[in-house]
Amino acid sequence: MKFVDVSSDVGLRMDVDEFVIAKERDDLVFYSLEPIAAQIEEYDTISEGVVNSLGSGKPLIDTFPGRERAHYWAGLWTNAFYGFTVGMIFLALVTIVLVVRGGGI
Image 1 (cartoon, rainbow, N blue to C red):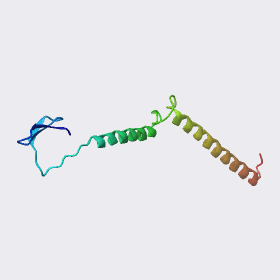
Image 2 (image 1 turned 90 degrees about the horizontal axis):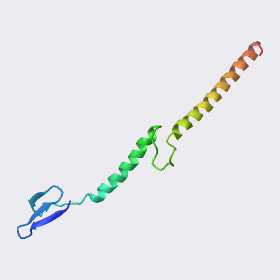
Image 3 (image 1 turned 180 degrees about the vertical axis):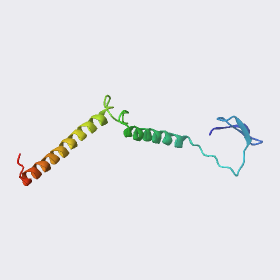
């Protein structure tokens, strides 16, 4: 908040942001919220990055250009690896069951 003294002998002040003229009182304390607004902007940028990290199509805060689909490819390779691993375990179990039952390969 920024104030301009309209009349110092009467104690009138004008709020520059809202263009309101009011009498200055001793029981009120005014704080400037500009430093807090800067912190809120910083936190807003961080929260935007966290929200973007949840989706696979949006870039993260400090990533290099062209890495927007990194989540997609990482998920694809991870799922392929685990699918192959689970498939091999299942194939090994089926083979063991067939050999134990005497069916042979």
